[in-house]
Image 1 (cartoon, rainbow, N blue to C red):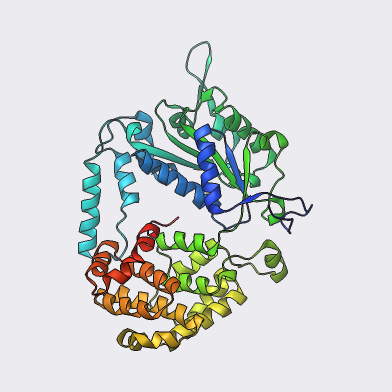
Image 2: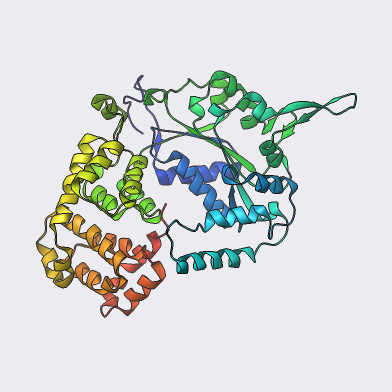
Length: 437
């Protein structure tokens, strides 16, 4: 339970849940088929959380996740036709999303990726809807009522037939399984809010009923979050179960970041200075900057850092200012300067030197060593040697950062390491956390 803040101008007590609790509550609502509305400040992972939940449900059901918005027109029509899955445009699109060939990949990586697709394709048996778990991310702010309910069609008879949009038609098919997610629902104007009433409560739009295996969830911001929010009608509020999500703890965010290839320097810095992870709405208003710190904006910092090899302080500061604001950019720049001052080769060759470092220097060393191993996997043993001279939490982070580079081969390096028994005391934590949140 938390007291009011700038997102809660009437100072009403609000029951807030952390990321893990939100996931548990979403699972309960899913099993009971009760629509859940998750609210909270921008950029803290509300939408990502629903997507991750959907991904896990698909895996648990032994189905391929099919994100409707990213399927080609050909694949969407193939879903509606519900023909054979193997070799269909749906399977092709799904596997391309699951195993993308990254720009700049060498021939070996491309061949390995294509081989994975081929192996997965061979598993597809039966009809399309027997094999996929659908995820519909719908922004009602971009829709008109007829985009949901459909349009009348005169077909030469004495009555009018109602034709649904393709998306609604697919959701109405028996055998369709998945989640209909209304993101940014708090930004929807009253006219479109009314269009959501029946979908949320009665699970239909006009004469079109959804499959009983399509679950409805939504997310949005609060009136005090300064996000162009419309007050939600009480009739729509009462159709949902409600949960307010608090910003993630640094450990929750690190677990997620490890699984999503977030830059090691960003991960290390935010473990050193956890208060920089997320600005409160009050802080954002006080600073008056367009850029401010949230888990989402730190992910943007990571993405920008990785597009160039140049990591000089001026570039880091520019990226930080544009994504998380001046104050955080200045502190992050200092951290990168600290890392650049460290001669990582010296610590790899003489790991005892790590015992004499300050806390900020140790975090800088952890991320720096991980980057060195990324460039040369043969340095694994030297990196493992450094963990003898670090506190357990630093050692665990270093092992996690290293292992995610190439989980299978680096795990083998850990097993073959002369002091593997010592590493094995840390390895269970590393292995359990590799998947991310």
